[in-house]
Length: 428
Image (cartoon, rainbow, N blue to C red; front, side, top):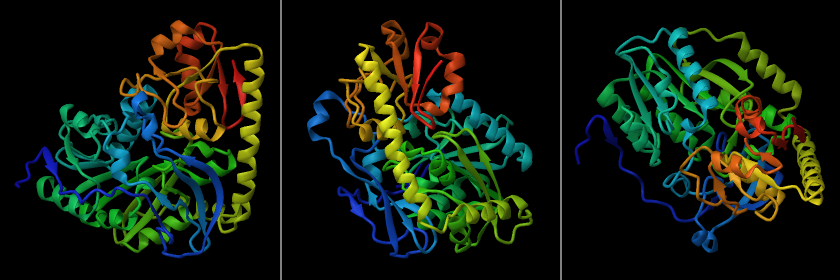
């Protein structure tokens, strides 16, 4: 089979039909792994379903472990990637706030690293092309890597798209057709990869000598300190911090040279990491040393913060359910606002079903008309939600609170949000 530029495909491995449980750390191989949190058995959080699929729905253990050797926090139960991404409902461009966020990132990368016309930028896990469309300079060669059906959406919007999971073979194919990359991004995707060593081994092949690899992912310290347990789901296999990441990347000839914390990301507060080839001229910034020192002082190498976190998760559950019970006793109607994957972790852990949350508003048309996984709550359009005007809406997309308070018709017409995280409250 010949490969054609613009419709580049890499042969896929035979699909795996079972769930496996790892017994070693993904980064260092240690088997000294400590379970500190269990959120019960849950279906994959992006597996929205029709009513006739409810009987065949599968649930898997959702448990977080800490590695005593390198301190990586991770899940060990692995749902096959094909089961998650072959019929994927997360269309990132349905979020106006996220489109603006990624447009700012693309413009920032273009300016900081002086990306020129004719140079290649690659987005791994490009989804519907949301980040690549943020590159506004003409002549930049924009290539996406996307295994799900959303890769077709990105392709029809004018992008070059590789329909495959990323690894050395995918990297080689991109280089063959387009050349090595000046910028490679992996936003909200790096932590999703089970065989992360194979993934990273493709980067030195893909990056130019002066190339930059950028990771953006929810930050472990925020997850723990702010009790953001809903960002834990089967798709997110690892929870990133710098301490385990630096030596892991070093094994592949890559240096982490800059880092920043950002208050807004696809799943909440995030960390943005900049990586280079180890012999590249880009200097290592003080930000890296400062963050490593902060993580050490925080207790990244001790189990205690994680044990305290598990107790706080239980406390948040109690507080939110108390609020919900109080509202239901007053005969209030409660809907849900936003149907992100992380919202399904919360709904299922709290055991909130359509008996309590009557329906959920969602702007992503791919999800409308389906039921949420596990809780089986109907998803409707935002327009229909405003027509029904429930008294309260459980804000599952709590990381967009400020945006929704300013832009939501539901709020303008007198609706109120029940915000579950990071502090349970009712606003306005």
